[in-house]
Length: 98
Image (tube, rainbow, N blue to C red; front, side, top):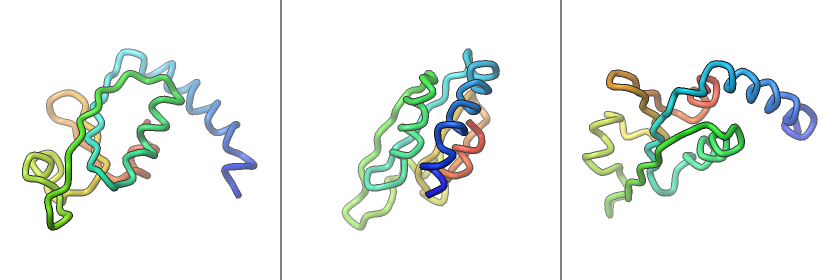
């Protein structure tokens, strides 16, 4: 797979960029259970980037709870926030952003 061939090289480049641009930036990862949030959590850990984790449980109908939809109106997870006016959803977009 591409990750096996190029993963370490890409991780090294992203780590370098993050250390330059993101050392003082703390993001909040809003994790909805049974979602792809673990991909973003793994990346934040690997890059040793400071973050805060907020965990939300799904409702009995498996939808996102209202407090999560206040951050991500479509209920898509994962979502990160940073500062007062920034929110970004979808794991691929978040990974590109980081």
